[in-house]
Amino acid sequence: MVPVLDSNKQPLMPCSEKRARKLMEKGEAKAYWQKGIFCIKLIKEPSNRAYQPVALGIDPGSKREGYTVLTEKNVVLNITTNTPDWVKEKMDTRRNLRRSRRYRKTPYRKCRWNRSSLRNTDRLTPSTKARWGAKLRITKQLLAILPITNINVEDIKAISKEDKATWNKSFSPLEVGKRWFYCELKLLGIDLKKTEGYDTKKHRDEREFPKGKDKLAYAWSAHNSDSHSLAELALNVLVKPFLGLHRIDFLKHYRRQLHIQQPEKNNLRRRHGTTVSMGMSKGSVVNYKGRLVYLGGASNERVSIHNILTGQRMSKHARISDIRVMYITKQRTQFISTFSKVKPVC
Picture 1 (cartoon, rainbow, N blue to C red):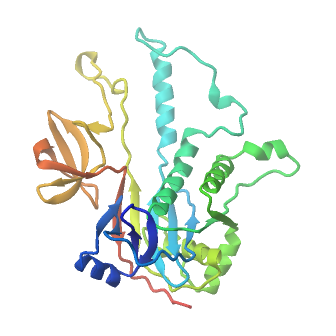
Picture 2 (picture 1 turned 90 degrees about the horizontal axis):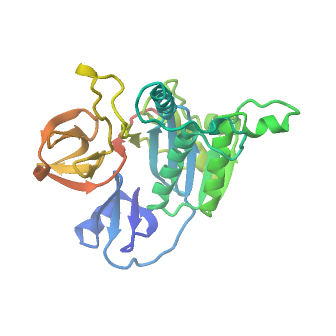
């Protein structure tokens, strides 16, 4: 299915690929890309604005996560993403560098109260917020192109302690992040449902969906079999699965640092890290001599360009005059056609 937007970029009900192609051939719609996901944008007013229930199933994970959007009859799209798990390491490095500067003759931040030790149940650590914020960004990205009415999330839980209410409030980053994520979803005004993991497994086994053992694989059986089951449970329907999926990788950028960690010759420390290359945002999809690539770092008035699918660097001497920015994004999107054996039960 192809997401459809009106002339004001308001989401309408998705249509089939065949109908989207005919609308574009007749000149009634044009192609539109939402951070790598293909949509069509209508040029004239649609014939009707009738809406049907559309469900989003979210399968959280520590390394990979699955998203499935479906209607009562068809699957719209599947998404598998990585998780930004590098924030904790970066925070530890920043703290160690800040502490080491206090013993050198160099400017440093004065000591402050250790905010991380405060017993504040509403506070999110940076690593936890990065993980659950990524789920919220993907959800809002889908809401911008699809009229989603129901969201079903697998309610993962950490082991708690009995008869210790104060302990169970903020003992686990998973529980704190999950509670924050649910509150943010409720603010969107969409019907939210939470499903236990054993209920998801029961439905998946009844549908005879395969469950892959490789949790890091970008395959439908890894996480999208669960997200498809969650979406079906949200609408209480049975829909034939679609095995293709969009792979989304969140890009890891090195933000501006005071200086590089290891000194060079003569004990010189050069500045290091930035999210901007020659006035353009890193990770942006650009047109370089007729090819779609994404933007990397800059050096000596030249920029590096990378393959939009694999991330491999293609050149580090590209001229600014040969580059035209298409859209700004912090993630890399690729469509993968999967041919796993799945028994459709409808």
